Image (cartoon, rainbow, N blue to C red; front, side, top):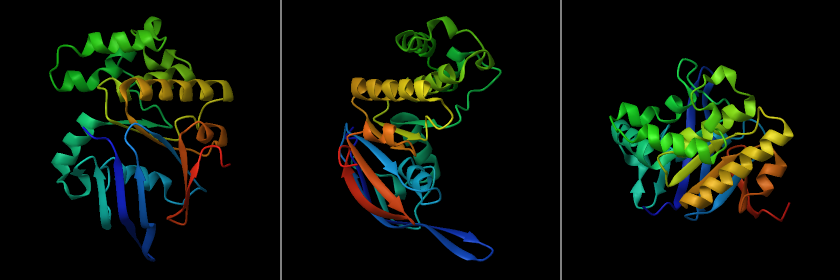
Length: 229
């Protein structure tokens, strides 16, 4: 699948007691297939809202979002869910690992839910590549913060998605572990040829992407090359 992303005049409004609030205000942007982009900006500027719209977790009030030839913003909830499960991998600031499942069970959960018998082998192989082979059969509470986030990355990419969406993936980590997670994300992204969009407050993490896109008050302030900081 062509994993280029096209966002066309997207508006997202939320209803509040005080009236509608505009989270995204006419956002348009393009992300080339196989490239990496950092989305930066102050808290509350619409970064996470944009990521949710890109992944089909939310629908825009107006405008369109296309991934490849698929206009995901026009799909039904069921079809968006199927699209996410097949084509998109999510990494969040909180690892969201299920505490009652082992690491390998967390990574391969979607395979198990879909009844695929190859899930365990694929998950173990990926954990081995990510340096987590010895942790595969441990519960998440027995892992360090950095190990947990690496496991979360494994869960997001084990199905080899065309698009990886990461929302502050290093926000809860110290500098050393943060750098390691970015190394891992970029390594996996390049290996599988995915398009990576990462929301971050970390200038160091943002500088390692191919491009940066700034947001402020729900509007794009400008696409920047990673060396134009």
